[in-house]
Image (tube, rainbow, N blue to C red; front, top):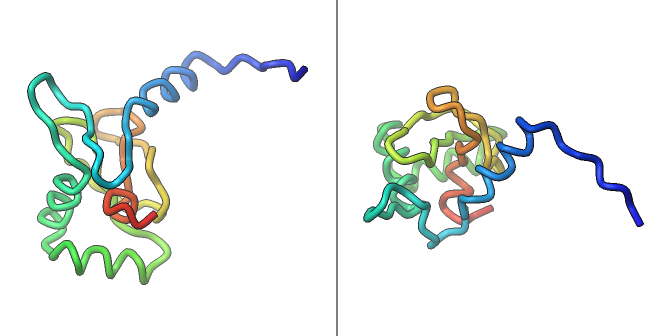
Length: 109
């Protein structure tokens, strides 16, 4: 039987917070009570912020080693360049691990 090594409290908290978010294509991201926002809504918001169409944003992401990502936290639209497979990147605005890449939001990865 393998011995379980306890995680530091900070890592454990981030892991629990990150597990609340389902990054699959048509799933809903939990928001405040009574509201829902899908990954596609966040992808559309990211395209709007970047001043590109959704198709152009994804085309650029596929052709480069890095792509744009957006925080999936309610009310936070912080964007940054991330790895294409990023689904739990750190958000400098809200301090949570909730930044997802455009390719993850679109369900490509």
